[in-house]
Image (cartoon, rainbow, N blue to C red; front, side, top):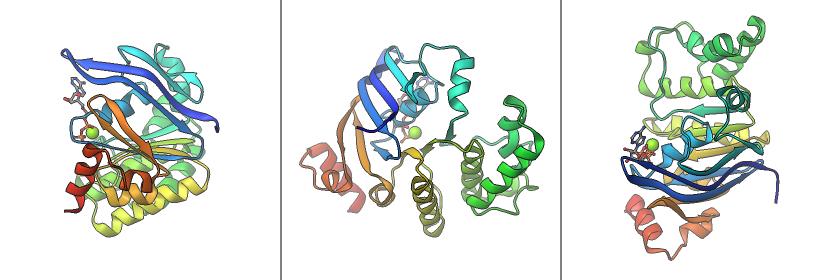
Length: 245
Ligand SMILES: Nc1ncnc2c1ncn2[C@@H]1O[C@H](COP(=O)(O)OP(=O)(O)OP(=O)(O)O)[C@@H](O)[C@H]1O
Ligand SMILES: [Mg+2]
């Protein structure tokens, strides 16, 4: 087995007495792209939030780059977060800052990187997502798809070893969705590891080395695209056939 980039060990999490994650185990190895699928409200975003340390498990442990991300100080979490980029489902841009300021925000405010380094990284990230000239725009001037790509750029400025994407192709037209898949594959070819949450099974089967389906608090399948596509599990089958019907 390769180096473990992310590891969830028996992670459980409940909200208002309802268990969303119920003893989840998951390992992401270096260089892999792992796709998480599953119904709405099942806990996919909650899983990602545990990996970036925005949520603490009720039970179990979260390790990132072999180090604990749960039960540690915010300072320790920030050290690990510098090595990862997260694209939030909502995009979560600051409406009062330009695109350039949004993308640069954490590097400037939180990590105080030198300004020429910040500018270089922002320029590269905006080029990678196909928005080289959008820096001066305000988020309100952007389409939903452009906001999404700015959110990806904001994750890329960390030059992360690990990317976490929460529905990166949602709301994108087919051409931009394809470009997003290609970006994920390009980063993979550079040796980066990734976890992608998506409802888009076309994309899942294209980019995923492994596809995991979350259901009733656990991953009920974890396998390569063909294994998942041909699964006999009735829940998996129903989910996949609903997409293609
Ligand atoms: N901060 C929170 N407080 C209370 N409940 C929460 C919180 N975050 C998530 N939940 C609940 O946990 C469950 C799983 O939410 P989650 O956002 O992970 O779903 P999801 O699988 O990402 O769904 P979708 O595909 O719609 O994005 C939902 O029932 C949600 O209401
Ligand atoms: Mg979600």
